[in-house]
Length: 317
View 1 (cartoon, rainbow, N blue to C red):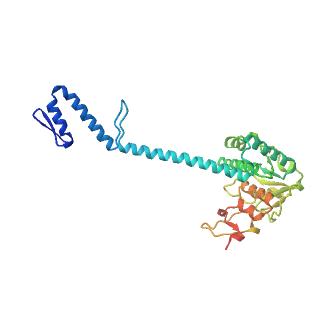
View 2 (cartoon, rainbow, N blue to C red):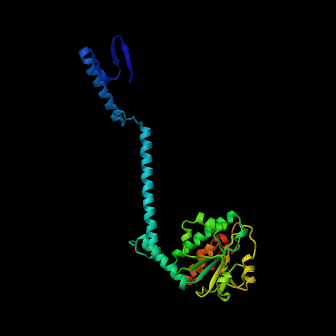
């Protein structure tokens, strides 16, 4: 709006304010303040028509750009809240579906049920020993990886319908691995499993022991509840071969490997990489799934990823 000053009178090129010029001329000094009030009202109305918000009191006036950004941000926050709520409901539905337990049960009841299953496995279930007597040569990084594998193994066992009883053998409370387990695994000291400094060869009759090693020539055919299965707790980035196999031979133990060669075939990959060496939690997932389903293909699919260079025979076209 262009204002022009000529003499002592204010003139405007806007036709909407011609009437106010007449008022200024006719009203005299007493009507000037009232005329300016009318001008202020017209200006406020103009801002309202354009969608702008005038300040009230000490409130800050926001431009259209700021208001648009604020509305956009409020939409993003609302969408994130809605997505989190949907994800929470989806996880809850999955837990109910996978566990087969009614949703009205409390967490305390579920913990009690898990505890009962684990303690029952101590008396009647199959036993799995993790041989931790070879950790003194491992680096800090390898110990951390092993501690993470122990955590995942224990978590899988808690969820199993037919859990194993877990024994950590050759495991001392003052060892670096024990400290790493306490650091990485919440509630490790209250895990429902056996921890002992003794080795597995002196805890059980030798005829009941089966050392699981990928170097064995015998494929595991079944999971016998009367046997004690041993996994070597070894994370070795330098990949020393046949360490667990040689240890089993030293004690004249039976050995077995997972039947990967019998049910799976090699698949092509970019690195031409094929390995039957698995983490202890992956081996346990295979044993646990087979113990529940009595189906080796289903069990191997659970623990052997395609990154190992193997796929099930029936999946090859």
